[in-house]
Amino acid sequence: MRSAPRPFVIVLSFLLAAPAWAVDVRAPRCLELADAQGRVVGTVTDVVEQGPKGPLATVITQVDGELYLMQTDGESLYGVDLAGSGIRVWFKTPDCSGTPYIPTASPDPSLFLRTAVAGPGDLLYGQEPGSAVESFEAVLSVQEAGDTNCYPAVPRPILLVPARRVLDLGETYTAPYSVRAGNCSGGNTAPASAPPGAGR
Image 1 (cartoon, rainbow, N blue to C red):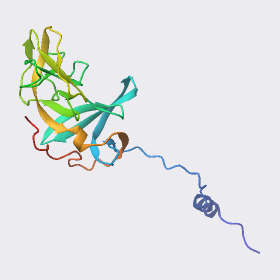
Image 2 (image 1 turned 180 degrees about the vertical axis):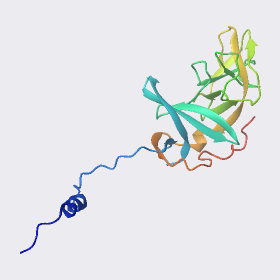
Image 3 (image 1 turned 60 degrees about the vertical axis):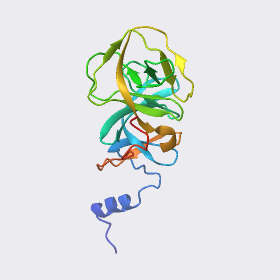
């Protein structure tokens, strides 16, 4: 007559026969934003419930050694300018020529370079590194995201920082965007360098 299986054998048998519906739950090491082609835009640092289309994800990306913040609702990318906009740049000229400027709500230095997305193709503009906030009594023109037109600006005092073209987002990425688990193994996951014409 065989003896009954020992307790530890029973436990082992139960573990080996785990149900097929067992769920693999794990915390991702980090989150990254990817475009429709799977290209990584940057690392997701925050998600806020304040967008008109739902949550907004804040993304940090690196271009030519500089760090830039953007936000996305999954359909478009926006700048982060500390003035509640991020979708337009301003000019001291009446025809949107010359140095672009980004608005800001504070005259104090920012931990990150202020950004805006504006113009045809959704150009990413970034604050000139080392530049200071300037106070203007009025600016003359403004350009908005995804728009080739130049509009007259409403005359009013405003705080601005000089900016430069950093990246043509429309040529670099394809919407829509999605958040996925990343490996955070280090290294640059965004475009390593800006395309020709950036920085002007």
